[in-house]
Every structure is written in C-alpha cells, then in structure tokens.
Length: 266
Image (cartoon, rainbow, N blue to C red; front, top):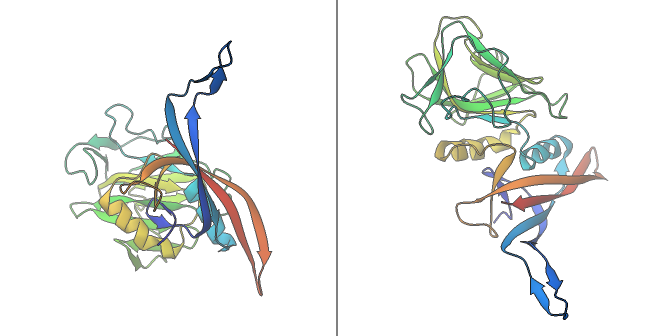
C-alpha cells in the first residue's frame, strides 16, 4: 500500500511521520498553574520520497506543492479567473454555460475560430514544458478527457495514448501560456470544464491515475491538493504542500534525487 497519494497519484515514500499542531499555547497564571489556550488542533505530515529520476523529481515537486492553475468556471462573475485569481489575457468569444457541464454546474463555451488565453507563467519550471488537462467537448461531440503534455509531446484521450505529432488543436499549456479554443481556426465550437494547467510535464505512468481521479471528482483549487493514504480520511484531506531540499545520488549511468516533503493540514 502506498504511504501517500496526491490528487490520485501514488508518491513513492520511504518514511513518514505526523505532528500535532495546536492553535494556542500552554501558559502559566500568576500562581504558576498551567493553562491551555489551545482551541483548534491540526496535523502536519512529513514524508521522505523514494529515489526518483530527475524529471520525475521535478514532477513530484510540482504535484506536492500544487504548482499550476485550475479553472472550474463555477463563479457566475469571476468564472474566467483561475484558482490563483489570474485574469485571462483575451476573452473574445468565451461565455459561461450552465448546460451539460461535466463537473459542477457550469462550463466554458468558446465560439468557433476564437481562442481565450491566460499568461499562467512557469512558476520556476522553465524548460519543463507544460501540461493541459481537462474535459473538452468538440462541436456536438461527447465530453472527452484530454491530457496534452507539450514537453514530450504526448497526448492522451480518455486515458489512452493518441498521436501527438500535430499537438492538440483545441487546448495547450506551454512555456507559461494556457490557450483554449479553436487554435487551428477550423470553425469548430468548443466547450471546456475543470481545466488544469501545470507548469511541468506529467510522466506517462501518472496518466491512468490522473484520468481515474479526474473522472470521479473535480480538481482541487491549486495550490491546495488532496492527500490520501493510511494516515488520512478515506475521502482524502485537503492539504498545502511544501517540498524540501533535494539530495542527489549517483547511479550507474545517471543521477537520482530524493527529498523530504511536508503536507500542512487544513
């Protein structure tokens, strides 16, 4: 059994511990009697990762720290703002629709031959490409789960690998820019729901886990993540993650890395 899953992805860990956190303190009155002012108790969890390849270590850091942006399109007025409150750089042809959403009660409709974009930045992951993940409806077709990693490139549709030689013509997250819509100007209307923009390339081994997770539930509002494992509630717990210093280890033909990580309980 994996000690830790983050947003559905198993994270290889060799050790773990948790620490109780009390909001308050123990003080003493004038006569020396101890008094506890704590009213709320939380838990922080610490893990040590296994030995990872350098590209996988980059991805795990991004996963744990909630790097990236999420767009749910649920808010009636701020539906074009990301989970980090970033406004779009272009909005022409984009409208909120409350009909037939894949998750929640609303989705984004983009008119034919138009696009909407966000300057999401690289968040310190320069050179790592980027990953678009979300639910897309092309024209009158069904909702399909698209995962397009521009750094490979690699394309997965409903969890299955597809031809990525020509990219994906309706969504892309690359070099700090997220673009949704008819990028090829084919005259096709598109709809999007629960869009996730990650500043790093997702490893292929993660795809089945991400697809299963994203099919069952909406993505948490990054930078928050959902942790699962033996120490967490069955439905998972919303956490804020932080990865520590990396420790490199020379292997036969390459270099591996491990690091400590902390998940702060909400």
